[in-house]
Length: 415
Image (cartoon, rainbow, N blue to C red):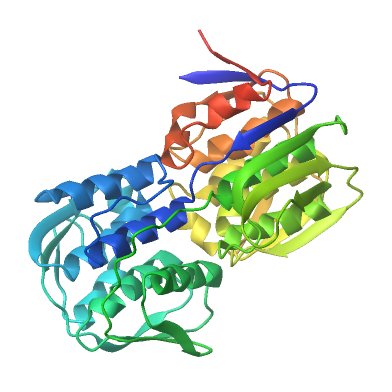
């Protein structure tokens, strides 16, 4: 399937953003470990969350989490610490995403896990059982999902967990989001040193009412839309966000304030409407370290190219092991619209204004939801922009295209 996208002249609308996938996936696993039977409120209907919902509801012998990296990491730790025998697997891409660091750490805690096919990669055969817990070390520069998976089982370990992170700590905001969610369910979990997290062996509490806030990562595409929309009379309201959130990607409001988008919350202390208004961007260059918010990188890279803002973006090492190699995907697809970016050391992207003749070929999405959503706003600059396999957005934002249509985008399927 290929979509042809035409952007509107002006936007004046309200969007109800999807629930935070990051919070949903954490809350679901913790909710299960707490033995809760009541449903969570405002649960996401995205693919990544639905595979966790199905796995926890049915607990089949073979659990297929498809392309959901978060589900693979979180469910591996959950299954290892929960009695039962299971095999967990996924797509071919998932079978080539490394998981050895998490498996090694779980084995040091007493887990019984075997590789079914290739050493260091899914699928995994897991014999779940109560784990002893204790003190372990893990490299801090790996995906925060490994660290979060370990942290969430900490309260149910017989000795709790003392987790020391070595080296540079990547995506610390996601670790803090995990600890915050755990504490909401009664866990005694905290940083006890600059590199150490301690979790007491104290079972999770059952909570009668838990509402999940909307997704700041999803808001980034609307910030990009407002930045690229040339009509300064446009105004957009995003519902369901909190200005006091623990979501690391809320930093998007500060980044886009530099790129010409003003954020105005009606209420500061709880979930409330957020209004976006664009003004002229005069920033010639942006340097930024995405270590704490790598999921924003594609959006900001595409926006800066379209706006003529040169950049040097660091902290992108985890982009190599996402749904696709996002560094290579960005370089390849931006050339189709005339921008030549380069990378350094597999963790830095640079654009100094170099351009090439655009081919205007359809944008490929590589089974990566964020490629589709980050490139869609380019329709403001490139009328009739084409995007292949637009259905990939179901991974995190199933109603993305419907929401674009609701604000005036014309989206047609290529014959």
